[in-house]
Length: 338
Ligand code: WQD
Image (tube, rainbow, N blue to C red):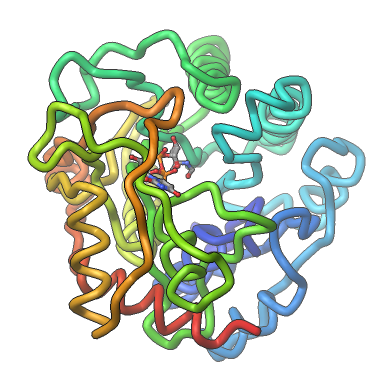
């Protein structure tokens, strides 16, 4: 089996960490990225950390002709890992058309070209957001998919459905849908991490930018929820654990016979509240964070965390890092940024 893997969005937060783990596992990643949510120097960092030369193409995944030049150059690729997408819930409410055009449009381009070039193995970057506000906080892959509460969430549900129907109609695709919970942290080398553009939407980059003085203070969005301390509970997973799960998923798809489209939850299986994240960040990094309690944020789910047993058993994958390491690594990375 050829070890080439096309990685769209491979210069992004999860994509870049996954490219490193693919190299460690003996694969030859080929990055497609137009740096709309990353920086060209991330490619240099990937090469520095992995001590390997990485092929990359600066291409917009919505541009089928441009993406096809990559498939034409590497028709022997074993598979595709598709990260390229917009991912900010709030922004998607302001820009729904851009989210559907990019997230759904790019997926259709990739699946069409995979069919043309007979590349079967596909790993898709999905999200726990497909579960909406679950009846029980701990969700497994059989938990019903709910009506999306944002265009971002709906693009993930739609992309999963398109992949399922494509697999059913052609019977050739070997697809894995990875439903991430909340990715946090950075590479232990502090040479790679999250690079939010503008004001961070997500909790942990907002915390690290507050600790650095870039933001004045963190606002905790609500403390009157029916949870352990009134703040929202999430399943925060270290980005490197998440990256390793992509390698495990690709190997599983390569070794499994037949055609399929299978979802997997990728989380630690543990719930952590916003206040617990703040307290852990302060303890592990020996600092005080400036924060206040504010009103709830529209659209927030009260609590959700993963039943990750299926990924643990079937992909033979478990998380190696805990919250403390993730928050230490996040801070170490933030301190390197100017
Ligand atoms: C986490 C908790 C906030 C910021 C979304 C997407 C998911 C994935 C991750 C892309 C919530 C609270 C946050 C702040 C706060 N997307 N918070 N103050 O909303 O759980 O998940 O991002 O990969 O698909 O749905 O993540 O980090 O925005 O929020 O109190 O300034 O932190 O209320 O409870 P979320 P988040």
